[in-house]
Length: 148
Image (cartoon, rainbow, N blue to C red; front, side):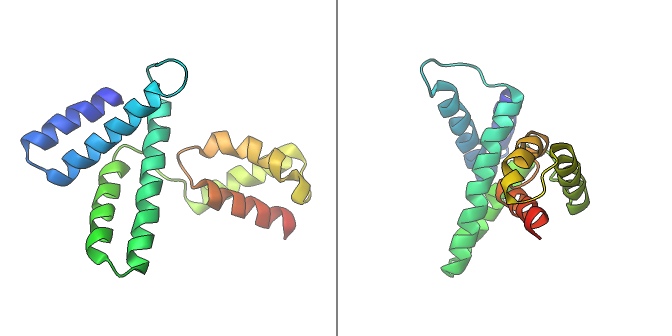
């Protein structure tokens, strides 16, 4: 995955695509920072690279919201363009029906029947949806199903 990012960066630079170039540079920097964090450096797996890119995409989504609230459409458009570049490297997001099925199966498997069971359900759901659904959205849906 990291090699794909590097290759695409080179292509974007040759095409003089400024948005793609800067976004891919930022993504590679985030990956490198993650690789050297901790006690010793290591090579990230493709799944770990996807998690880093997911975090970067989430930052862009939050920035778009903040810029729109501040009536800064120019900056919001820039963040939206960066988000579109990152989306090409992320797995397809789960639709509502798929997420609902995963949560239903997890509730059945864990035997949870109230708010106290949320941790057990999330423990089952989280690995299945990692990178494919927003964690806050998943938690809110699990909470809604367990309480209501």
